[in-house]
Length: 336
Image (cartoon, rainbow, N blue to C red; front, top):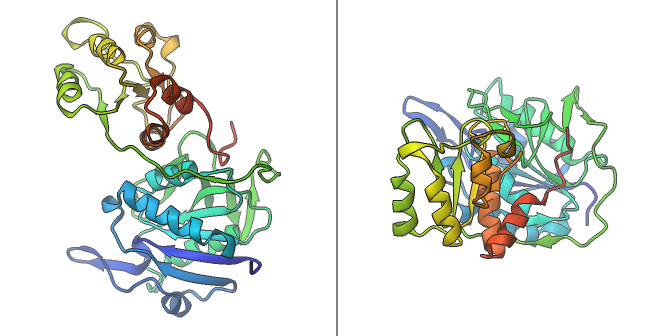
């Protein structure tokens, strides 16, 4: 394998688009020639544009296409950079974090709202920062997003939804910061590489249902979904730390009992952008636990969705799904 050779994978995003009166439009394919013209790089790299999609159109099948490309070229490169729109980057980052178990190289996602061809371009800074991370021997294996001078673990990506397309870290501090082309890692980053063989597990079961709970929500809608659509699992976004109504006509406890009796896993996650579940600490959360719901704990909403799909892709056994959801399958995020 050539030393420090990076594969840049194009999937869409703002680095090859510019603003028009009817919205951002792609102006050029992502090629080596385009990058060399607008952002000359002092590293050895190849470019492959897999597809060109606004990230709102990226599907789980496309997550697998991206990961398949990486897996097939894994031995030929020291790192991988994925150019991706920011709207659904958190889902793609979560998927890659799970597909590659015991990852031995860095996989980086970048995206923003400024094309490389613009006179003053945030995109050039973004791509340069990503290459500093990719080619740094101190970079631990893992999936990361690089944005605005920070490095965020792939399972903690949170879209700030600003004009720059900034990515934030949801529940922990960024794992690294980039200052004057120097990558400064957190002191609690793992220094050792995985000692077991990497596994590639891209199987998903996407037949799940997700419902955010709001004041006045009618539980009959959940029963209707359960009986008509027959999802293989549910995610409920509760209030705050995951609590759900337990009194009167809006109580969700009858639904939780029915789902349990039917062997349908129900995961409850925090309704906050950055938060965790504490069902056992609240009077309104304890009854839900009696119906064997699965707490998402510190998982982000996006990671909860993808991890449940991934767990169901491994097994349909409710107890095993619960066990997978509780385990930490990623090595990118240090605990705070």
